[in-house]
Length: 263
Image (cartoon, rainbow, N blue to C red; front, side):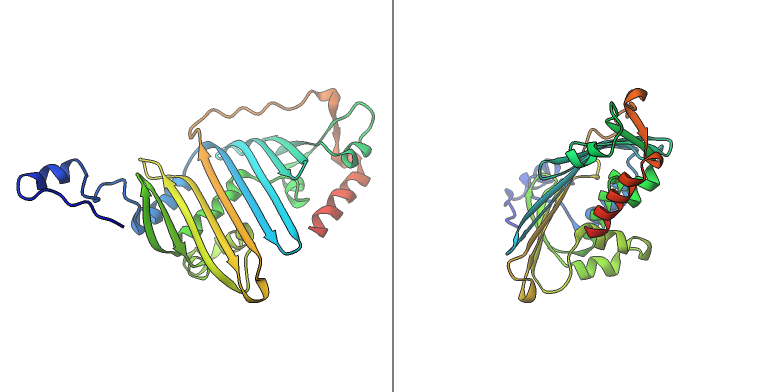
């Protein structure tokens, strides 16, 4: 990182006061990153965008999870998108309502129904509901940051070690971190970027892992963006006449389970 020279003597105190010497609180440091993990997890509500891009010799896959959630009351909305398929979920008090813009989904529904109702736990087990707080598992990757290069106020690029991040992540969260990153085996490089807020939470984070050896040609990118912190989240269930109970549709349950198992 280039450090700006300050004028000697009288200019030095002014330089420190105005944070022109690179020593300001806007600098991203290892200590700030470690603190940011806990502070971001403590957010009460927010708009969250997670994205995943996987490039392999066989093809490309892109997916995203976007939504708003009140983490304390587990209420909000999410949209899971993969290709042209979108799954939209509204949830509160342990109940979730799901709709998918795919003909295969509509095929299983009674006439006039466009949504199904189930518990959030069941939809999560079927892989069609993703709590936005799950994306916070990516924050633990910051425990593996090695070198940091300032790229702006409260912003930096970095190299990291997934192995180091796993070792320093609390045991209860390691499986979530591994699941969030989906990376293992031969790795050529691990880089990322991060932007912090002035209050010390993570505004955005991205990770890029490039494979080597048996994983040559594979590029995996994960990103997390957090905005509208503290927003009021009030999910609205769909109109009752448009809703069918998932429990009353065993064929749909089986189809969702098969899709989840195959993925």
